[in-house]
Image 1 (cartoon, rainbow, N blue to C red):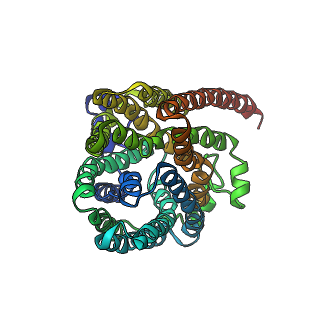
Image 2 (cartoon, rainbow, N blue to C red; image 1 turned 90 degrees about the vertical axis):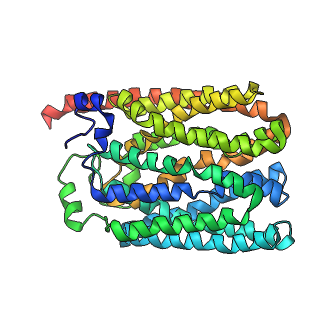
Image 3 (cartoon, rainbow, N blue to C red; image 1 turned 30 degrees about the horizontal axis):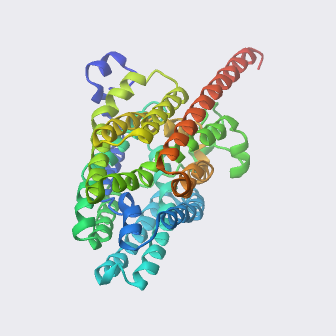
Length: 435
């Protein structure tokens, strides 16, 4: 393919050539991701909304965020199964529109008065419903991206989508920070409008991508890691122990990284008072802008490094970037921290999903994209209750020191996994002539 990352000379002269000649629906998904990212208003400010608008304390807010992670899982599992059976597009589009519609009554309740008892009960309940529908959509959407790409162009396509999310997210938090203080109902209504607009782009420009029966049968004759599997999800997962180990280790980074949504806004609020929300919005905007600037250079620099090694490197950056917050008191150090862990985020985001996609059977993409987040999502799920309880009992400085240790140990585990993979490949190479 012209302009892929394999043509290292061309890529060095102009790294953006890796994004040429991708399938046209990939560009449509990129545009939809930009629109959707620009409208992600609710969840970046949800912790502050729960504590300052609905009156929850830190522990209650942490427990609620945990419940949102749990609510996501049944939707994702069922959504993945439906995507493999009926198609990616119908599941993704339907679930996204339902998720957006739930935000409409949330905005109405805020308009009526966020401090009322009905709002304090109904808004969290509706947010949980939104998360369930979002869980339906994610496996189908991820399977759609994988269907449209090959191992040769997948890193470019996935990184383009990642850039699109952050291109939108560079705008979203600034708008959301203003809305949080001046028109909180529009956090919900604006989010709903953005999701509806992004989904419309998918409806118009992206075809159904579910592999045909013929394509699945042909794949069974190959030795590809993506070839179809005859059997259920459990037997398919059992044939890929390295993938399961990778998902487990990478999940610990979720426990650490998710604190930027929970503990970080609490810390900025405690240290800087009313200016904390503005500072946090600026930090998130910096995060998105750094992604836009550094994603292509980092992909170009590390493209020849094995994905598992790159993900281990991302863990080391998470350890440093979040660990230093235990000692940060001046706004400048928060921006330094964001720079370091954003480099880790970029490396992780552009390598972890590629590794997973390249080791997932094409016949089970929807189900794998539902069950693997279930297995690997425990880090995100535990992040808020763990963070809330540690902050409550030992303080936020202790939390950041523990996150340093967690990220460092998971990174070391990935290096051990890489060694095991290379030994396995050498054994296969020795056995190949006799087969």
